[in-house]
Length: 152
Image (cartoon, rainbow, N blue to C red; front, side, top):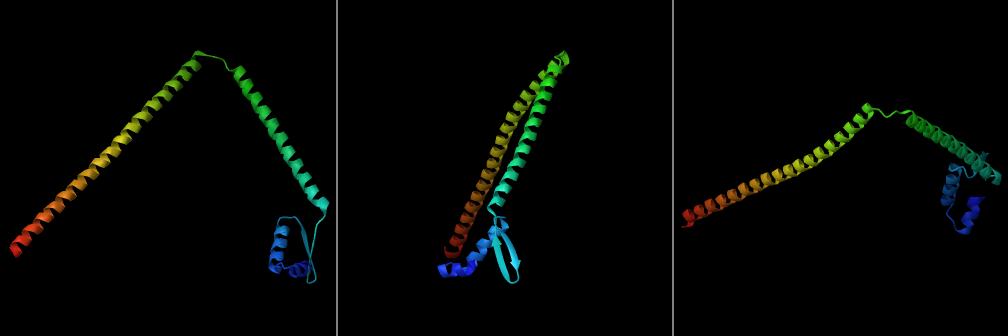
């Protein structure tokens, strides 16, 4: 009936079928096939109950996540309070800092070398262009000599 009513209103029947199928796929309406007819229906309370179930699920997930965060925070605080400052620990922390600064220095040095590699590549390209220019100059002189000999 919906397709017939839509056709009378000037809406393409295929568009109506497409929209109805999308709504069925999205669980907005239900479809029952009885005989050769398709019946579309939905209850307004069904959408509300779906949203309430989803809300309950999200709230339980939120509370679980919050409790996990709290337990991890407590574990961190406990570990910090139990940790003793020892000579060995301070030397290890100092060693870590020294290694970090050394890594920074090495990275800057590596950056310098990569720039030098780029310059080397440019020098090689310039040398290649210079050789090509000499080759063309030699070819030009060879051609000029040939033409002088041939036509005087």
